[in-house]
Length: 242
Ligand code: SF4
Image (cartoon, rainbow, N blue to C red; front, side):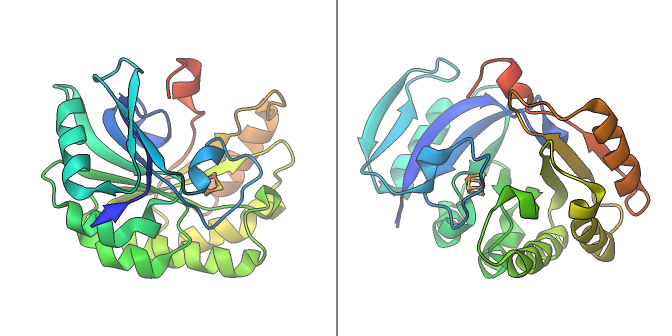
């Protein structure tokens, strides 16, 4: 089996409750959404080549042909593994588009899934092999899809599926224009699944910063329904990492 992959490299997870953890990142190509803040636009479409980091943490790459076979990917992951590396981050793009391939990877290292949560049927295929699930919920102002209500319903279904067996948390990108009103449906949805699921509010990395007062206001609002609400920015961007 083969998959279209943008890049494979070793770096430090910069988002969510495992920020600071060393991981091998497998960034898959293709995504069904079109968020306006997307910071990996290259990975949203299929290309004929995949970048593989030459040596762990060097940021130097060589290129191989797409699609990439399971055996070539496993070899690249093992060569990039290091003593402090903890997980394989399956990211994108949208990794759940490649659920069948992920199922066939059959690798010992723990799998950390970073998903936009929009594909519950695909999540169901691999829920039992995912150790940690970082699940996005998109907001209407992200302009992620034509039918926002349908996307939100799918996102909540995916979170419920993954939360059955994986350590699961939810991440929501906060824009300067985000308000309590635009967060309400997402917060109610998470609370209806499990109010103990951690919610990370991630201020968008941009020249237009989200005011601190807004972050405090949104944290308090979310905490009326959820037990663990945190603000964590993209820390890898501070370090200039991939
Ligand atoms: S889901 Fe992720 S990869 Fe897809 S458009 Fe949104 S930010 Fe980009």
